[in-house]
Length: 262
Image (cartoon, rainbow, N blue to C red; front, side):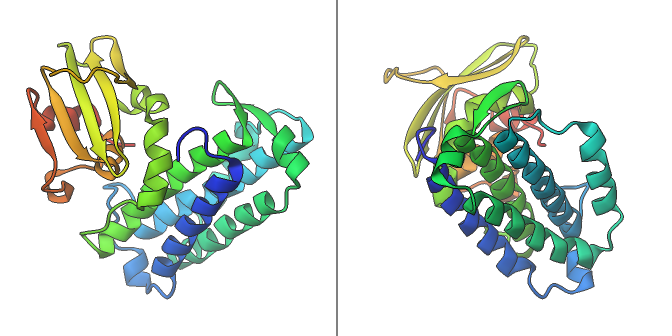
């Protein structure tokens, strides 16, 4: 799947991502809920809380787009964050599952006509429903991994979700990537699915564009698509880097430093 994937396609992947995380969160003890997630600043419960508050906010965005209203501003968002931050850890875990399920129910309840005409100006972009759901899938899949990997060090991003998330990285790298004093260009080749990009890093920032050049490049990075997604999101440390990752003409640690994580 790619940017051509429909809202229905992405909704199915969101359901699968929700089910995967819900199965992990079910029955956690308070000790497990307060244990360290992959994110240095958040416990498992706090990552769940972030996903739960995000689901509530996106429900507001969904309603706004349906009604032709403006996206909710900070006056609506901040109280949601405050409420979730004040919850006890086990409540953050349990309520997150419920909030994500409610978001999925809201989207499922939309009629075909409502899905077709849904639109919203959000994050400086004019978004349709498929774009909104793709952004949610990226957030949910990556933060789910933050939790899953804390219990299973071998966990990877879901392959089906990766096939969508990986095709939206061009809109992400400029946000997650850090400027470098030197100019670096890397050809990126992924497997599962196979993709090719041209990654530019330098004083002007970070950019990513499709690569149609099959000639030899000065620097090349070859890796599974899910590992490429994790690199861009700052989650490809040495302990979670597949043995299949290959790089020549550039330093993987430099790329890790360029994408410190969000």
